[in-house]
Amino acid sequence: MKKMMYDIVGFLLKSLARLPLGVLYIFSDIIGFILCHIIRYRRKVIISNLTACYPEKNRHQINNIADEFYHRLSDYFFETVKLLHISDREMEKRLKFENLDLIESILRDGRSVTIYFAHCFNWEWAPSTTLYLSPEVGGKKIKFCQIYRPLRNVWFDSLMLQIRSRFGSVSIQKNRTLRDLLTMHREGFLTVTGFMSDQKPSHGDPIHIISFLRRPTAVITGTATLACRMSTGVVYWDIIHERRGHYRIITRPIAFNASSMTPEEVTDKYFKLLEQTIDRDPANWLWSHNRWKHPVTLPDNNQ
Image (tube, rainbow, N blue to C red; front, side, top):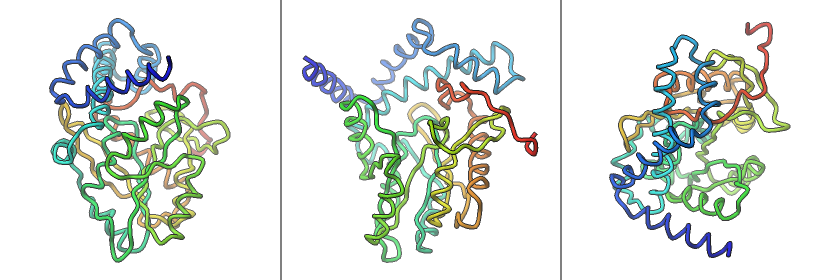
């Protein structure tokens, strides 16, 4: 029965993916309305997060951001499903990259690249950068990777891996990151690796406490520590929602060689850039994640 259910779900998702995005957005409008006004999915968490991060905004403004967030969240689902059946040409029309020559210059210097990006919609489209970057630079072959945390449900985990490999990138489990990247380097590859580094630390992760969105926030430093250890270049992908179904990603510099900075310095620079991204368009970040569930206090030197 379980296998049959998953087969039906898989068939439905692949059938949906064959529909034009314009049609999928009709479904998205319906689901967005249900999430926002009927189910009220994690509404208390979303409103609490927004209110604390934007104390200058009134209740009407906060509710407007929350309502728009639900529609972006629903669009995210259908845009992600669309990856099961989308042409390279359509993706090139819908997601534009800027300043990729910064990544190429780091690769030409013989360094791998660490890319910071966040849960800004639609992050699942970002791996399409392989349509723009060369698989070989300066005689070195390039592997494009992304770090992920496996889902508990094996079937959905397999589906997301299929979606995330649509443009030829390699998904690496978080607990195998250093091992797998070092293996690729020993095999002669340079790597361009994306890290989603805006969630709250997991149990056992080293933390760094900063002021983020006007709140004391515990953040992870694992990405920066790995970049410093491997002397990679570090960039930030600033995701801009231009209009429905159309995005732009600007590559912004953090460090040409991370070993010239401390992990805390790299982390601080990333979160300042991310804060600017969120402030520019608050509805485009994943507010339903309760990243401030466990309050922290800023160190005295950061007060």
